[in-house]
Image 1 (cartoon, one colour):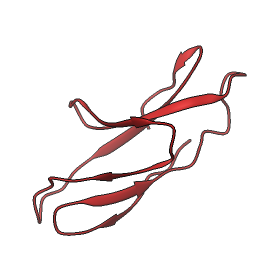
Image 2 (cartoon, one colour):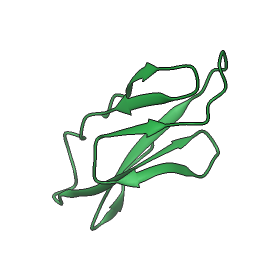
Image 3 (cartoon, helix red, strand yellow):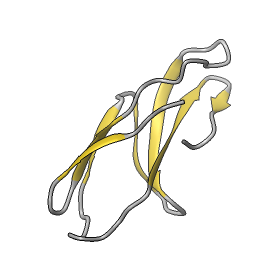
Length: 76
């Protein structure tokens, strides 16, 4: 299960996560990061990204899922 770890700044956060331990037998090709009920903020092969445009003092809930040639995993 990927775990999100982040370091906040006033209007952005740099987050990183670990690859899932099980992949259904296919290599991970990319990850997708999104806020709850929103469009993706990042989609790519890295296990970290910078999210900008945040408002100071506000709480945000981010989620990540992995993709491979068979599809995507569950949001974590």
